[in-house]
Image (cartoon, rainbow over all chains, first blue to last red; front, side):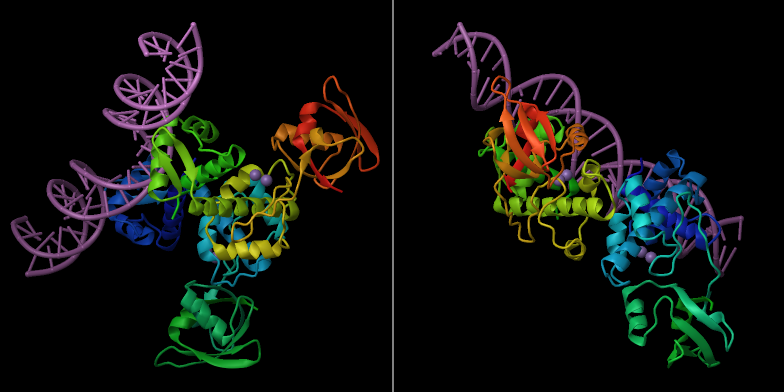
Length: 219
Length: 219
DNA sequence: CATTTTTTTTAGATAATTCTAAATACTATA
DNA sequence: TATAGTATTTAGAATTATCTAAAAAAAATG
Ligand SMILES: [Mn+2]
Ligand SMILES: [Mn+2]
Ligand SMILES: [Mn+2]
Ligand SMILES: [Mn+2]
């Protein structure tokens, strides 16, 4: 049985493994976990003993198959709870993460089975992130940041690269949420800002940074 | 901020304080918490430092007002989650306790507020136990075990003194649940067993032990 | 009331998780 | 490649929560 802390490390290692393809180094992980590098060294040894990661001194960690399964299971719970909070308890999408960080560690297979059922077997969480199935399978749909799409393209907002409260609040203010229809109207060469049409109604200009953080999939 | 373990100790101290009116002694608490008495000695010192209990060596512990408030808050969360599990996720009333033991430690005032709302502000949990309000107020309705009621009395099952799986399963088998209407028909002097009529339909005989564990309030 | 029994506390250890400071290994640069 | 700088690990300590064994206090008993 993994402790809460071990589960959190595994999640972090999993996420960091996904972005860059090779071994996760100690300082990166320490940064992600907001702990001292020395604490990370201790912990990765422990996870290595439990066969959750492969680890060699000074070489960084790679998550094992078993570790990945464990991480995806925690991520599944996290995202299902986020759906619950938004769909059933009327939480706003920028309020759910902290609570889900706690709820994701509750151990009860029956609970998750029933919750999944109660929520109607959702495939995506409120931020557009896919929910792994019971076996840790992810159905990843193709999605691109607005910054990389051509003029004229139509798409549906399916996710964000930045789930920070400040970014989500910005999106709310301009009227963008998961499911919004976006058309790309124009792009300024000098700074990468983009004119978009939201839900066939409202035209706004977004900065390059914003464009890089809104993910669309085909309409 | 109290740890999970501290919260559990406080709950136990609160429960034990309610039954017997005076100081809770170390061994009783050790028994309740399934730990060694030495561990209890350590912990009550810590809780005493945090002003959650009053404690003097060899004299046992008394819960403080602040401790009681904390305990009742945890109990509130426990019972609300039990209602959620039964009402929304179709758990059976004998399956909820273990999961609620975990869920009760989630820290989020908003979550509990919204959950309460979502559940329609329930006043009792699936076992008939009252749910404390946000301020730790308990509305305790008068309830008596069948063993102490007179012949002819009509009542509604509002709780049980024994929440063990085996007892709850027995109740299911004979068709008694929270809300069942019970009339007391006869009582055998030699062993205290009681004939009762359930929901105006089914007559059964229950043992004294069972009669002591089913709580009725006026119909 | 002296003795025995029971209860409770202390002492000393262990495990998990974290930290800071020091030592060591690796990398980049001149 | 020697040196400087960065990354990582080890050493040593603290905190929380637990245990067993031993010591001490309180309660029960004859
Ligand atoms: Mn989240
Ligand atoms: Mn999410
Ligand atoms: Mn319960
Ligand atoms: Mn209950």
